[in-house]
Image (cartoon, rainbow, N blue to C red; front, top):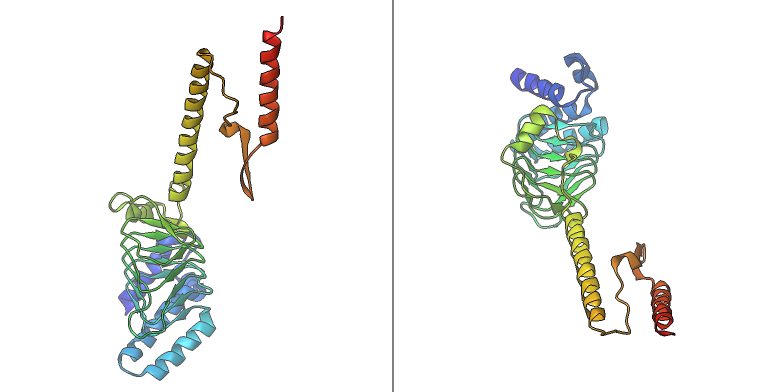
Length: 270
């Protein structure tokens, strides 16, 4: 017991720069209180004293603002930072050295009995406001960005961001652990996270730009052979994007086409 207490305090000192002394942590970290009270409730739950266990968990929520069902299984060195609004369901399993921020939900999506809450591997970080729902698994060293909604399993060494969450490219083995040991991946986010949706949009824009250049080259080649088409091929510069979507400025295209026709007539005129 003493070893576990010391381990939990050292873990908070390691990952929270605001933590100054062991006494301060003991007196002012509700996330720490919540975990310790849960360990008592969980033992009673396993001993089939379930009503008392639920009563203790309810007082735990009243005292700390953190709701942990006594049936949840929690490993070593869980750090609940800030903590207010955290909800951990009955069949949730949390591995060693995980970090949860405020307003995180490890919830279920089914009314059926059995495993219905998430399983977190080792060294998992779940950012503030994130919702991890259903009997899914978050692999070792994975992260969930703040306010993300995760409804399918996350592989190891991967960051999930967005609603619903999308996955970044897998990190190198143990890189998340190295970050946690040195810089710490606060709120499940880091500056080098790649958004797969943004990457896809950038690839599409690059492809459109190449198509624009190809069309312009085709138009130039046709003109060199005295083949004139009565159309204007809009480029990406002729378009704009707003809340309603992508727009091609027909008025500008018509004006440009008219100016081009007038220039041709002026050249032909004696």
